[in-house]
Image (cartoon, rainbow, N blue to C red; front, side, top):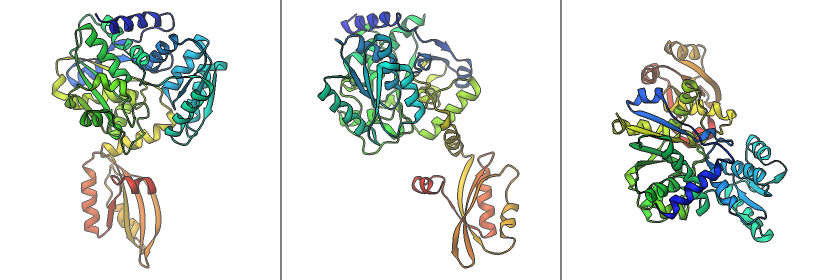
Length: 410
């Protein structure tokens, strides 16, 4: 056992004075569905509903005193705030001005009078710059969410607990990747212990920073970032995590579509009563892609967080329906004559439900444009509907898969 393993185990033991280990439980529904022995490491059940508490605890317990500062719009902020109050440390937490009020209120609740929250910048880059500038001016200690040796060591406690909770080692571990602190910590611990289980690393397709780094041989900054999976959508994997992850086989990194992730969030909520944020659902959603690879095997999925703002639920439902092929949006060019709308309504199938209807404008003297949203079952119904529209002579355009038009019109 190397020094890293010993330090990670010491950190885990120290955590027991602060918060309990998270459960590792078998999920019967997922096991039956995928023909595997599926277990969930429930990081969504820490006191701040994410694993970020671990790294914050380990880094802050080693500090020499004085103020600490961080930049975060979510779980890292809450973990630091919780530890500030527990350890009696003063903290300044920088958050973007656009941060939802629920996250700000939760951070303030966890930190109490030990934490000052400053809202700076519309985007995270400006927030991060402000936090670092403050540290330089005020002599505060900056705490990175992932690119910090003590944070990585603290996140390794997930693997330490997992090792003691299972009588038999898992065949495969599925872990989400954002900045890389958790995945690097777990991999480093298993390496230090001399027994590395098979691992799969999961990223959102719109934030695949590890994939980009492995291809380039070094961390690179993504040109574009989809922030929907806010707990894992990171434009650049951390330098320290990448030093640990650089030899991960690229084929072991999965990139998952954000809209499909919404289906998994809904399923886990409706079927299992488990509330997962988008990043927390990544490992479970990955089971769809692993398919035959996991049949008959023991698989552990790390559910990294459950800080889900239920105001996002309509958006999650919308994206899930569109991904599943159960909802589409069309622009129709309708003739401006009596009975034209009735003719269209008569070609709808028994399972077709109009979810939105809006006249946009007259495109010509005798025609007008209509935006219509339709929900249906089964997905194949849309092909039949489009055929009937063609037969009726209705000009139509499917907007569902057009991201630009979708943002502007839908």
